[in-house]
Image 1 (cartoon, one colour):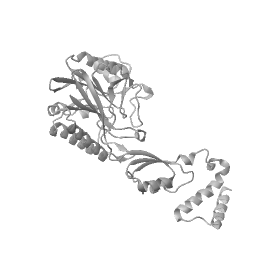
Image 2: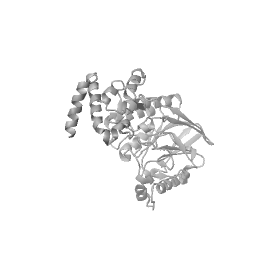
Image 3: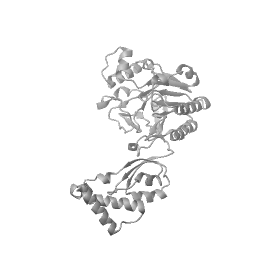
Image 4: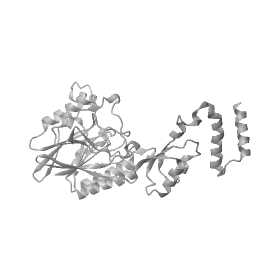
Length: 375
């Protein structure tokens, strides 16, 4: 039996006030294509379906279109859990009715021991879901004394283990932060101070553990305890991550193979560093000039409206940093040279506006004005 493991779609996300919906639609189309070409028996989504609890209407429409294609057109069941960005109550609206169409929404912690069983020939695979939940919620539902996230997660995992059957392959789906795993800037902390970490140890007896929340594809503790990672880069800290989803194959003995399937973005997310003129020249020849960019300028002198100049060749520059202007080794940073720096900065401004260098006479006039003002 084969199934796809994905997570952290974050549909409806904005990045530096730019909507990523078009980019997400491009990537979701690739996931649908993998469902077709790999002829999988199920699709697992391990939380953070939306980017916020009340998603915009166009995000809901995109998810609806995607799930209709997979569940109804391709007749492949989808099993999903809610993440910390989702509203569990809103996400599971109509879950009872949609189950008949092959869409299984697991977002109630009261139901963690109720498995979704998928049959393929003579093999039964039971999928158990632990939606994102805080320790207080688990404490209230089960009336247990649970102090932290690790206590709550371990308690739920053990309840599920007690409910598993030995004649089935058992898959656990969970949205959590496994202690020691690699995090990214784009993940919303579950709790400050590291109190949100949970141990992988209780999960080792499952045949496969499909994790969500962390955006980097990775495993922790055991190779079968795996984060698929997010479907797109959602911060510049993720620029080197290889986004994709996991193709999981199981048989009666358990996990046979796990394969990373790459997803190609409509626009990549990159960091470019260098002097302005160098970046502008390379932008004219860059075949991927529409990527989302953070530009880090190393120029040590003042530049008039660098963002407009950059966007003339790189239209999707989203953030600009100028570390060269704040370099302590820069002579303009010393108090003694600050007066000379004012005249130098005006020379830069003049040449950028007019396209010409200031004459000696003009420089003398400006220096005199600056000296008078400083007095």
